[in-house]
Image (cartoon, rainbow, N blue to C red; front, top):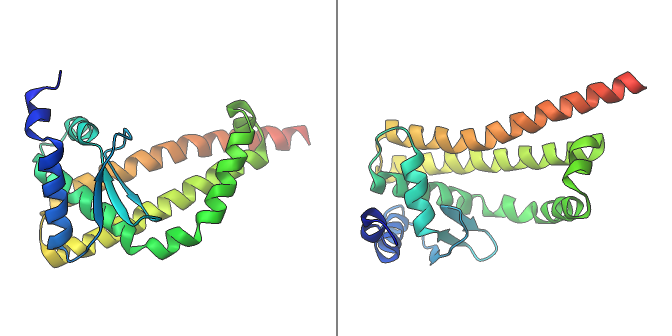
Length: 188
């Protein structure tokens, strides 16, 4: 049973909010509801912004700052549009991304996190993702400056929270990589 908040912030309401944000910044991306478990996504192949209504509400509740829900969704929408503005770079990374996915599928998690070469590929993937995220946030900031939809403090809070997720996972894997490198050097 959904709670009242999720009933109020239903799929149709969110679709309209996201669509109106896309129009307000002068872009024309399609919007699709999905149940991916990820609050919002950008699919560079179909040039479509996706959203998971339930996850959007949950993710907003996880933010410790008091940010209005609409501001949260508008900011995330501009972030996904920031990826759309970087679509060519995303398309150019596709072959390497597929190679990395294949390598990860061919090896167990233990192999990935104990083999220096395989772990370097995991680090490379993190660095690619962080670069794309930082670029998307930079582009989103430009969109927001143009359309003036969210105040700067709120925008920065949401941006920093979003980047922190990527950076913390990267830092954890980088520490593991450092330990594996150190162990490799000691055995040589």
